[in-house]
Length: 193
Image (cartoon, rainbow, N blue to C red; front, side, top):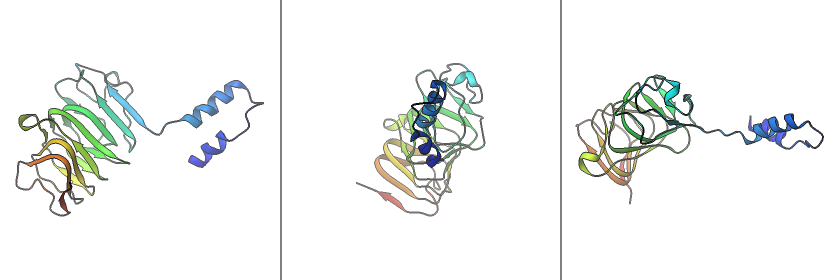
């Protein structure tokens, strides 16, 4: 696909109609990132188009952001699992599983966040948490998959069983384990300074 788009961009368009040129330039500038922002402060359901800048599409380039307008909790009901690359700003999340995929996958949550959905790591995924103690981000529904769970800052609390095989790496911040089987059964556990 990239080569096809590249060939279109290299054409000599000096004798082409303006509407066609505009369309071809649009193809050349097309972004591979599918970013949406949460815009609702009342309805918690992900499958309601009015809650988003554009209804998210499941895929490894999907980037989701929640600002200050999010309700107390949101309900992930768009897919099971819903595939995404990254999410920022969630406070409380319920519903179906999320599957992290793509390049540089990450989850950056608010203080005292409650992530009550299963997280599937198909790639190494960075987690940035909240402030110390009661403000830590709590992962309450387990982590599975083959990717590495990477803590890159803040405070993350694992509060349910983990089955992922990619290991755990603490690069910054703090990782707290609230249950005996919260660390993966296989894979390296490392603290990197």
